[in-house]
Image (cartoon, rainbow over all chains, first blue to last red; front, side, top):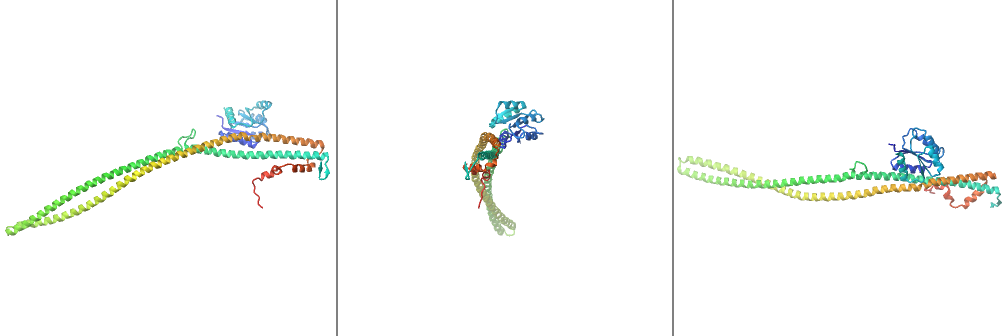
Length: 122
Length: 318
């Protein structure tokens, strides 16, 4: 069974708080990162169940983060969900190619986010 | 355009616009930052509210013994069990007291029987006294006979003396027995009275205690039921609070969209300002008069100043 530990990657502290709050309510332990590079550093050596990442972030965006994360043993087979305000098809195709598991458009419904995460975690 | 009595050139106007654009861009970023800070504070508050609410819910359900998948019988159920247990103990105690009271009644009955037997012994002592009197009369007759017979009647005299002596001892013995019997009867009577008082008092007190125990337990059960009702409502409220916060989370996400749009506007303004400055070879600093004019004509200047917002809530005394 996948561990109930999630990594939230978003440059907006309030968004991280909202996602974190929602996941904690569902019994998750939560780690937070401000951008892709920060997330890569923080996932090292961690046993995670899921990653939820924003798309547009400084230093390293979500797509690049997913590409690099898929090269690490910690996140190779981990479900990675993109949580973003964007919904262009091209971006979605790019994200899927990079290795994203799913795409959620902000603003998210807390219950729906939990359901989606539980579904991708199996 | 007239400013301080001089005619502004086209470069001055452009420089003023560039400065205005720069200033607007800065204000937009500051506004975005203020909104972000406000939403973060709300989120912090929600987080702690939700945590407290969850803790409250968990503690309450644990107290009520309704924890999902938990051990089941927790504090609330234990209280109900304790009431039941104390009821049983008190009833047992009252039963034992009733038993003791019953035994007291038996003891009283036995003491009364003893008293009746003592009365019979008293009658027997009276009979002994009667015999003693007869013996004395017999001794007197024997002495009279002895006197009439002279030397030949000396034997009668000896017998009469002996009977007189026995009668005297018998009288003394009877008197001692009568005294002892009287003391014994007095003790029996006092013990009997004490036991009667005790048994009667015990019975009344026991009945009162029994009623009091029943009333107290009934009150306690009502209180417990009410408390559990309140706690169930409180637990439901705690869950509702969590639900309300969930609903607010969606609403608060406007800030993320608003931030991105404000970023976009500020970036566009910066780009337009940079292009205008490059096109007309002016710098933002050249248009300080235009900035002054803009600051004067715009409303709510204080509210837009970050310093005013940061110091909100602070008290300054002079």
